[in-house]
Length: 290
Image (tube, rainbow, N blue to C red; front, side, top):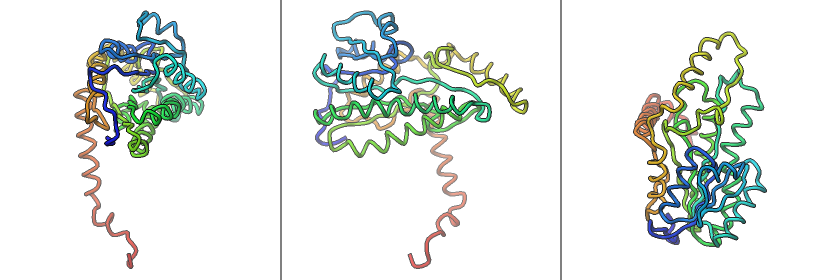
């Protein structure tokens, strides 16, 4: 964190902008921020879903936002500043899941995953940074996934590609904006009982290749059977994010859930093992006169 950061303490009232706040984890984040005394700009493609999920609140502003539309992201930030005078915390939460084997997924479906889950945070963050630079303070929280750390199963090619992209984007951005008192935080949830695996958020590629047929059937059944049975509590994750946002020293990454901690450790060890596997060859590649 930059020494210029105006740290938001847990008792301070700050202004949060949460994408995908009409259902799922976004609703829990908005509720947790409101309960902590913060103002919330809740965004979703339709504000009707926000109204149904969150009701009315003096410190709540519902704004329509399709995160794939840069102009809409700029309008949402303007609405936040016009209503509350500043913008302190952005939570890039909106997302979807294009599930399927890479060969069976259409180019359009693959691209739509990147547009929503990578370029969505890019658009919203780009819109928010000028205000945060002016304030010389701010926090950009981006909900990634354990799939952004390690892709550990079938049907994840498009989703993991988008989340690995988010990881690189936020990690690269961190040093660029730190001198202005702006922090970034990646959140890598494991399996939480959100609506990501519901029909509203998950689209399955149509089976088309016989070689994948048996695995496709089994994988779809597994994903669908997991919906609503995940171990993680999204309300607890939301409360944790509000707590972390108020810390003086915020983590650059937060492993959300015991399964996420385990995956972090497994991936870290795998990288160490791979670095050592061919260390002599890896370190012998310099020019002779270097």
